[in-house]
Amino acid sequence: MKIVNSTLMRLIAVGIFASVSIISTNAQELKTLGSYQPTIIDSEGAAQCLFQKLSAISFKNNSGCYQRAHFWSFQLSNQDNINSMKVFLFFTARYQREFDYVWMYHVAPLLPVKKADGSIEEMVFDPTFVSKIYDNKPISIRDWTKYFIFPDVECPLVENYQDYLNYQERYYCYIMKTPMFTYLPENLDIEKEVRTSWRSGDLDQMKKALK
Image 1 (spheres, helix red, strand yellow):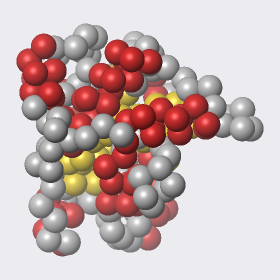
Image 2 (cartoon, rainbow, N blue to C red):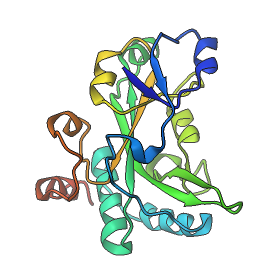
Image 3 (cartoon, helix red, strand yellow):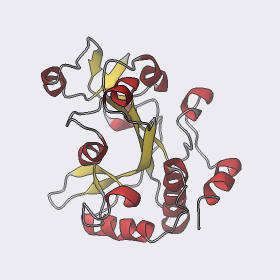
């Protein structure tokens, strides 16, 4: 099992650490991203403007997060010429059992944003859930997972979807980064190569979520 950038001591402290292989890697080395290069947003202000444009889009109440994330990513690409990523948050069987939780996963667009000090941080764009709490702006992956996961533990980053499926009892959650073209998490197993274009069937299904 390959896990990336995990905070070991925090996991040990809550008693959910298991012996795994930990590596340190740049996001662009992840095989779930391949050679895909996301657009870097040049300021936090620009990122907030993009976020507010996305939050203005109306979806049906029964729309799925995968439909919303795909539409937001498509809009960023089609209207603003921005290549985004997606970040999947997977909830394990252990988490579902211990906290009576029914979701298998959640997903939202992810973009690197240049901050005032010149550093670059990957920020999650999830207007449906975090708009009011975080002042209608993108947030860090850490804050995003904290919104959904209790207790406050860090979700290891995996680059194999099968690892999430096979290791349901080791952690409460996992995250995975993919290009914007990934529609459903099972596509990561079905497709042997990183997708590099939109698929018409996904776009058709995505549009059904709009009001």
